[in-house]
Length: 617
Ligand SMILES: Cc1ncc(C[n+]2csc(CCOP(=O)(O)OP(=O)(O)O)c2C)c(N)n1
Image (cartoon, helix red, strand yellow):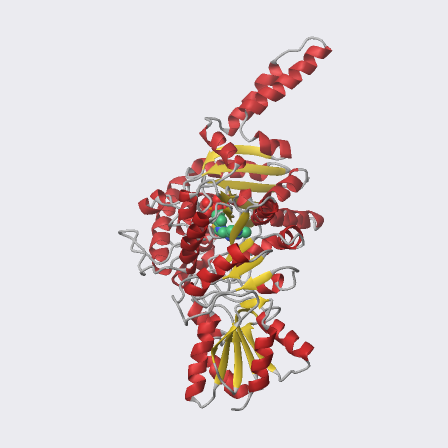
């Protein structure tokens, strides 16, 4: 690929050379992402848009905010990080999302959807208050536009006097096909043969129609409004207060640079509707943009993923919930734009009327589920831990205070690996732990997971969350008794130290116990199963026997299992001193999961050594 070490390098090129550059960047992306894994299809779709942005605007002075940020690879390539692409998403390598700490060209960190317009408006306001001059551009996908936060920001930005450019990258896809009324509206605009020039023509033609008399003038005004409404693309955004430009072919550099230059000169909030193709330029990704949205390392020639794929927790959830739905037709499933990621694809085929994909709208998903529960259904809401953060108030106010029977299937709980700090599911226990009426449990293997799901749907009443990790787990770690609310199990007896763990960390605790055994220390291992309510009796009795307690969790040390056990010990008046093991109270970087466990001393070897040191065994 030609030398592009900063945006200045491409400013000297004309459109034909930029088109060649686009091809080179596509080849580069395919080669690099095939080795590291990452978000390929979204990036292939924005190659020309990103080049055009850097041709017309000048970062870091001008600000570009990438919504979600998974499509920022081309921006990274252009802004001096090309040579670090082998390290993409690897431990100590460059992130898969914009990071202010990584480059001055990244002005705002993203990772979760629908934040860009709010952030851009804030940056524009600050610019104007400080009397600075720069352009501020938010790039938001049509999927991200389904998030409520994006609507809140459009509503505010549209009536703001500040210069701000919002670019809608409309590829008709979220991770799966996009959903909802706005998406249908955008599709209609896409299929209209209008371009922004036409809009001006409409205005000119309408203004030329003469009106005779006052009432005729009024009627004509109304008629003009209706005509405009029917035929003008983007009227929705115009009505919000934006100047709408589009739709634009997002792979035509001539058109793109033209419209961006025009937008740069216009005043007030501007909305540019750019149409792109997800996966553009790589046949496998074009045909299957969903699979190439976020992909593991793959063979370029065949598009096949390199590693063998064994069933994950999400798959087990998908299979079991399908069986459960077959047994009770009140069971419905809700996803916020992740039917595949959460394992609900088969459910959507078999029970299309009982699966609700609400778009990237986690808040709505939860209150919507609360509504269904209040009217007699049993909703199972499957959302990744980090995205559930969005729904805190809906969980508390709409579900828990009314004690509604909503089952939360919290996928990707714990560290997720390469997606890094914005995506780690490290906070769900702490924000659910103090919500009244809520139960929180976590399975240590697939067998326990299926039992917990059945328990949650058929036996529990009130809100309950089951948290489970990204990736694969064991079929059956040990023969487990049936699930009982708030009851844990001792999986291995011992006399020197009590290891209290939950979920995937039960296996870590068992391995730690084996290492300790070889060093002459006998550990009692408890799988608490429920973080809330906690099996106080089981823990206190064990600690009374061993005199030492260690908690191990795939979660931040603040407000999780460890905090609950400490509270228990304090309130019981028998506090022997405890070791609380989990992730520290700071952002956790990206890298492979096992590398991160080792880095943060949550692998069995490190835990065993730290226990030995702590109690001077
Ligand atoms: C709050 C939140 N929910 C879910 C996701 C997972 N997610 C990442 S990208 C994406 C789809 C985004 O679609 P779009 O904005 O159209 O971008 P595209 O990939 O199509 O370019 C989703 C659902 C997220 N990042 N944040």
